[in-house]
Image (cartoon, rainbow, N blue to C red):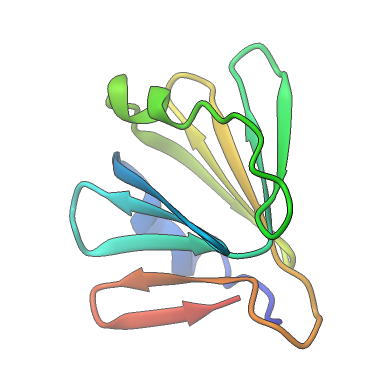
Length: 121
């Protein structure tokens, strides 16, 4: 629906740790330990392991096994944020990475909550 904001606008992700991963029928929500930040994915994401193995998940159709719990168990912090128009990459200290996808279609692909700020993508 919308492109992602600039890396500067998303800098609040730096140093964040995951607190919860919530699976809903048509969304996946990442809740961070500051309890002010949530990332809701409604389209597609990639989970990249430290060894480079990539797991692609289409939120609308594919609920294959996932390993997000490792990010919580290891208290893994975000060390890098990358953003282009249609991708948001969050890299963790362990080398794991989450890549969230958006597109310019008619439907929302997700949103980011930061306190009372809402970013729709």
